Amino acid sequence: MKPFLSRDAELRVLSDLCRALIGRGLCVQMRDAVPKLIITRPGGTATDIIGYVVVNRRKGEVSWWRVDNLHPVRDLGGAVDRITAFMTEPTEPYRPGYRP
Image (cartoon, rainbow, N blue to C red):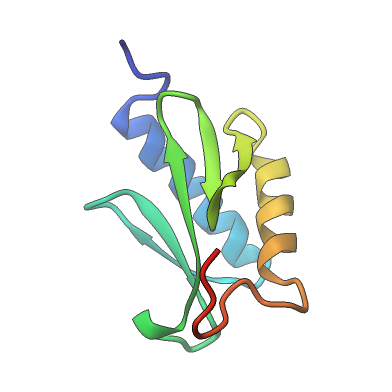
């Protein structure tokens, strides 16, 4: 089965999301070895990760934190809104010992 998105398209989607989320004030790093975005606390390190964002190339969806947080890649603005809202909720998605 042919993927919905090519690897290059996946990296472009992540790059666009990265720029938009940084513009919203989130601390975001892009990784391309295993393509994903890592969202950390301000000034955070790898131990301060509060979220991950990945692209499902076959389904053409962006996913964050857990598999049921999905949004189509054709609406990146909507994905940025939802990811920002999720990551900035008063009850932070990451708490020590918390497992979704």
